[in-house]
Image (cartoon, rainbow, N blue to C red; front, top):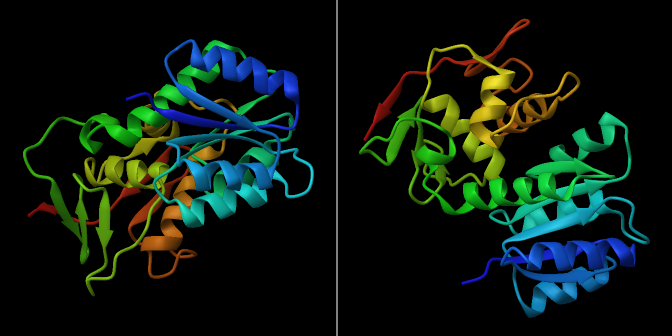
Length: 241
């Protein structure tokens, strides 16, 4: 079955370009110009991934991304932005986007980003995180339990915690490599299959989001600790169930 994409951009020429290009690679692509049209399109037919422009009339892309993520935790979201400032990309990731690409962009790079996010959505987590395959699909650490097959996470109390695609892949990379210092480049490669740029803070943003969901005090993290000038280390003992 064709994977369904929704392009949300107020520039007609960009909508047509992306619609034609992505359709030529076998995707089922719909295009809309604003938030109201986006909601109507998704209510009619859900999709696997949304390409979302930030500079939209009315509700901007950040507001829409936040709403999409709260209502569709398993949906892929790629921010497409003409804003060059790093802060716009960082905020986009903080509200739950899986990736971002800046305008003007190379269509081949955009296609690679789309395929990467969709691949992480549909393939087993062990492969998405770039780790060695293991027979177990359930892992435990510090009272938490993860099910890799269903991409689920539970507290010790049994309460389920919803993670975005990127957050779950990041946590999987950590639990597959406990007590090992992982550089930002390594994490970027494991999760997004590309290196971090010199001013790319997307890994730091996703670590911050993950800490707020699993740490007792995200300001004083005990599980995901920063290693100055290098990256991060996951400190709990991980066991397979």
